[in-house]
Image (cartoon, rainbow, N blue to C red; front, side, top):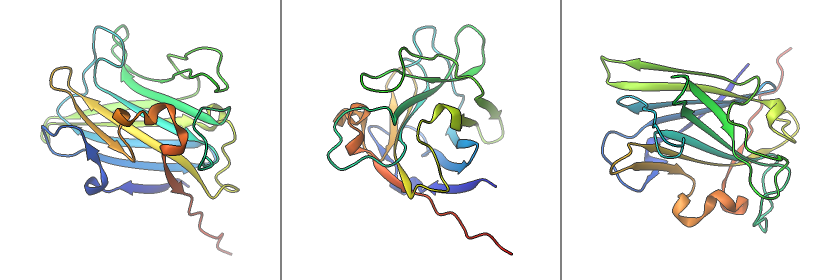
Length: 192
């Protein structure tokens, strides 16, 4: 069972709008965190680093960060989903931040799943990804009440449009877990 949460388009902040707002859904199960995003147009790669082209960044802390947490710790994670310029596929990676449990960046996360489908009729791309629970230190959705969460979606190399929830990277949220929003797990009771 995958439990889903829609982040309403009206709740998405943006640095600049060019097209319709993206659709963003988040799900979770014991297997990990599931992300589904639909964006206008194609999700394009860059010949340069992943952060130059179209990409999604997901910031998580499992469990939710204490109000005073201003730095990464072993439960804080930064993931990115971006087209790979060498393989023509989309990868999920994990970015190393000082204080987290990683020793270095991981450009292709083991046991992750990701797909991108372009729909010419809608002129949109849907990206679906699964971040495995093995990459989420301290992740236990049946025990935890929730997680700290933030994301940034960047589209277009020129005149870049960035959508975000709950806070923009312009406010340095990428390095401050206390500034991330909180998603509460709503695990339904088992039925007899």
